[in-house]
Length: 309
Image (tube, rainbow, N blue to C red; front, side, top):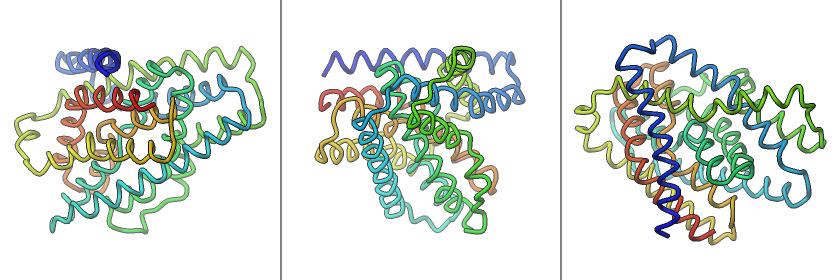
């Protein structure tokens, strides 16, 4: 258990060193706000789809992997349904703005930016394979339930935005190539792998830049935020691990699921809060504080999952 914790902890520390580089660069004004937006688009529209497609290319299609894909899909759907139920029961604030932010920050993890690099480092291509499935389901749920929760209006649902989501597009293309047993030629696969390699350093630098603008005194001053942080980083991952273990999930699938589930609050929380004029300050505080605390909680939860795997 201790060795697993140290192994995972080392990987998380490596990621936080990259976050520190982004934090220092933003404080030193080496990176502008426009540059951060540009890097975010680079990761969302190029790096993330490339790493998803690349991971599926590295896995041979067979009946066992197809069954694993279906099991993983059902597990991730159940994790999100359970998280929605917990958040709705716990957060009933009269202030709709705060209630929406608390719920979205609690339900949705940063399963792309924080999880995929860690899944790749610890589990290799198998980890990214299962992580990609998690990202695909996440995108479906966050752009439907998450969007409506934050906006408060079902009219804001957009099929066009859902279909055009880069993470979902990457998963669909990857699964089609995988099921049809199509291997990409070297001239396409090589540049794709180079772009996929950006998925580790660039998202961490982006998170560091976001942390550089946070008022930490205010972030740590909201006592109710700690309830959301505890649910996001400890309670939901622990319950998910326990239930998945009872259902017979083991190995890389179990560990990859816990890595994604134990990640800090999704950056989408702030994006939606900004778009729909909710409590943006609270959203930034929750995303930043969960990211900081995850340096301790993620190794703990992932090491625990490795012990059960």
